[in-house]
Image 1 (cartoon, one colour):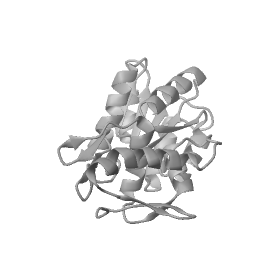
Image 2 (cartoon, rainbow, N blue to C red; image 1 turned 135 degrees about the vertical axis):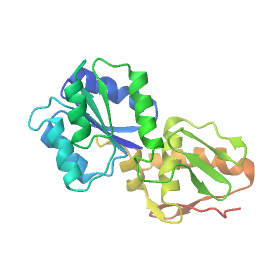
Image 3 (cartoon, one colour; image 1 turned 120 degrees about the horizontal axis):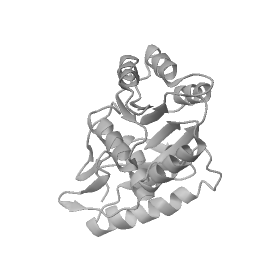
Length: 225
């Protein structure tokens, strides 16, 4: 899942990016409200963490503009400590949830998971392809009763393919969804993760659910054997 953090406090933004990436999310960061608004318009984020006090355009106005443009990406707004009026205005402008500063990172991540579980991502709660299942909010997956043990990046690649099951997904699309916007590595890194996934989700079960489409990318199916 790809997230956007709009936060002008550089130290906090860096800490959030590192923590969320360690949990398996791809994270883009904006330090300015106008830049954050532009990024939110241009990219299919699964959720946005949005501060109120921002240069360029404050969080209320960013949120209001996104909602006015029918962009329904879930928004977790960061408010001032004991700022009950901030919290009320955050909800009134279209935020899905709020969290007062200073906050616990553990609580922030739990709030994000809750947003996605509630259907804020506008997608199915659990993805199913044949006997394969992926629970994006719970960060878990498996076949039948057998649960996989995947790294954060492996899970992210699997989720990306599963959300577009039956389609040919180009490598660049996978990188755009799984890695943050500042990724400058080789697209062939996707091959490494697909190979690892096959060893964990296919080979032990006699499946071949991730097909290679030469020169383009990969397709996930529910009938590969």
